[in-house]
Amino acid sequence: MSYPISAGSVVSPAYSGTFIPQIWSKKMIEKFYATTVLAQISNTDYEGEIKAQGDLVKIRTVPDIAINDYAIGQDLVLQRPASDVVELLIDKGKSWSVICDHVVKTQSDLDLMNIWSTNASERMKIQIDRDVLAVLGPLVAAANRGATAGALSANVNLGVTGTPLALTKVNILDILVDMNEVLTQQNVPEQGRKFVLPFWAASLLKKSDLKDASMTGESASAMRNGRIGSVDGCEVFVSNLLPNVTDGAIANCSNIYAVHPNALTFASQIVRVDAPFPAQHTFGDIMRGLQVFGYKMIDSTAMASAYVYKG
Image (cartoon, rainbow, N blue to C red; front, side, top):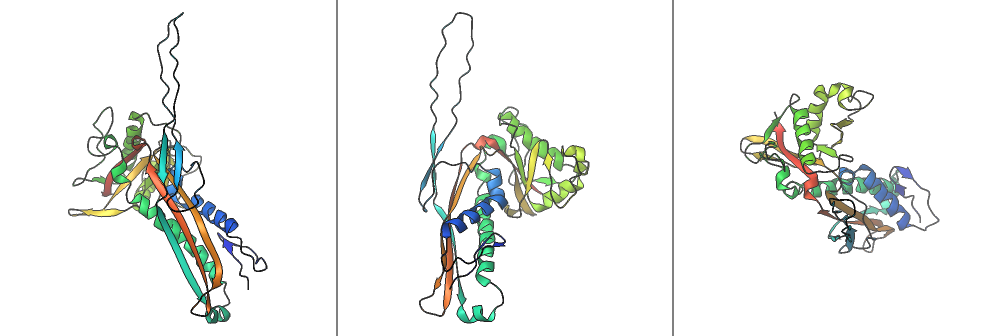
């Protein structure tokens, strides 16, 4: 017996009992990359094909080209640039497995397997985002965080454990601009920079002077459907999955980030989706999936963090 399988919210027809996991998996991973914050702020252009948990993805880095003084008639000093290869280990995985009892399926007027598999893809995104966002803070370069941030100035206060910054609608723009300045002091490319904020910080941003569309660089006000737009040339993303902690008497402290995709490399692949198949010890059908992933900080100077709380 065949069941319709959905990719995202679109239900595809049954294929005369033939399930095509490769197509379904491809659509599922495309949906993952389209909706996850992590994939938006990291570099997902990896080399190689992930086939299983434990695989290595080899990433070529761009070498620095030497710039030399020149005088007429002198011989040139030739450089042979060599790309360092960074190995990204796909050492993490998430899985899901569900069973639909035949009695339940017969009595239901809904395609339960479709509904459950779509929900699984959304929950997978949430869990992977939460796992990676939880560990980013300590990976940021020391000069790009803390009370003396700034590789050149060392005078930008971005908050530190024990004394987080109180973020308000009055100062949030200043703090975001300071974070962007920290990236500039590290010579991080301006194009592609992004901010990642928790939902409450996004609300402060909407109440700030950002209400003036000229602050976003866009043609319409930022007060629309929860979409922030951009600040100081950086696109803004909002995530409910940034971890928060209690620091002394201050609750809900969180890191916010300014990041260029060169900082973090992320790779993920759905390596197996098993079509509904009969359960051995009961009357029902089982469907399950496995997604593997890995991440690595490639350039810690291309990410800045501020340690804040809602003031």
